[in-house]
Image (cartoon, rainbow, N blue to C red; front, top):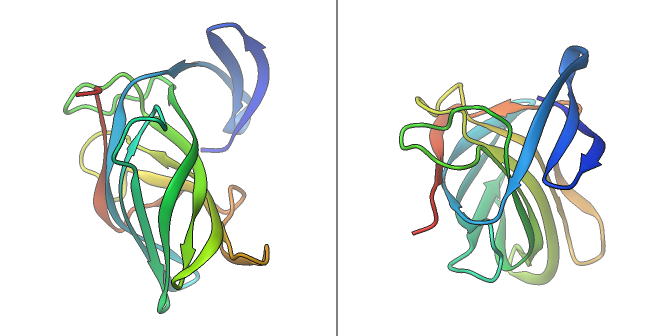
Length: 168
């Protein structure tokens, strides 16, 4: 689902969702998302696994992405925002359904890589339901080495599950 922030109003944001439908979303300060699985981009399989907190200061925060013999490992979660857009991520019940994050890590073992992503929990089952809305990885020189662009997404999970949780 492509979203564009339209108007920020203190505790909620009006967003433009695909097909011109307007919806409200609001940020959630506490929680975590876990999971993983795989998606396909032009026949290329991209796998991922993670545990990420809505508050970057809380841990652990782990993310691993693998594709065509390449890998990205998150070493520092720099920014995280969790949003409740009204999609039910249950079971279990959770206060949010969208996870936006970015951070630095290693690309094929070399420090200085950067990743930016959005993961969605659309409830059960995860397969053909949960999604990577976008994922971009750049190497230490700034070269884009993996790009699941928002224009081509969302990329529904072929296998696996994303699971939003209360903070505990």
